[in-house]
Length: 220
Image (tube, rainbow, N blue to C red; front, top):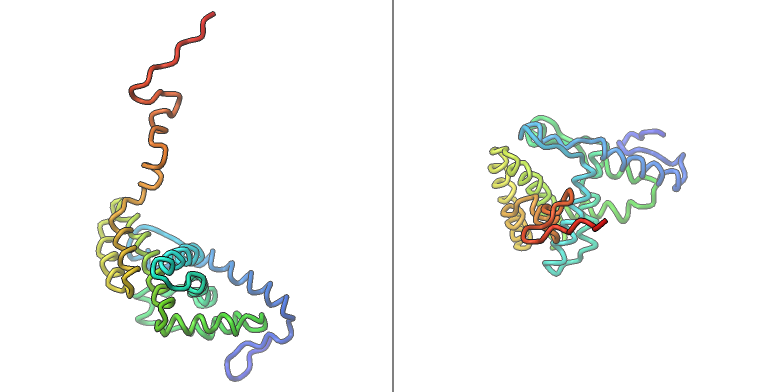
């Protein structure tokens, strides 16, 4: 592998399937790349892969709600932080003093894979944020953060409330604001604690639900 004078990485000595294998391993680095903003919040943690997964899911949901293309929105979310496998995650304070070139990182990651013509335009579309799908993907990125912050708020980190307000102000779409509002208003445990079988909590360990009669012991 050589690096030409213009700064791009030359992977021409590796065939396309090998480069696709490289790409799979590189994407795996996101599992080991922490999101660094939680250092300042004082609680909470996640890696970039975890963030990208739920952002993609949220993007799909938002696009379905807004009548946009859910698959394209999901793809925008899925690839939006892939450059961080090379650059790492820069939080707000980091960005005051450090710069990165995410498009170059993405271009180098895609070199020789045959995916450049498909994936690089997703990066450019998201950065421009002109299409409905890009705006929804930007909102999905923030709503994933809001969901994490709501968990931390529910668990007692009072600083998370101010972070939620800041993330809310960054939302771009009506669909994003509606979903974010619901996320911020919902206790993060309700989906399982108050799930479809609430009586399970009474039946646990063999206890009968309230109002029911205990079964008779078998006759000898």
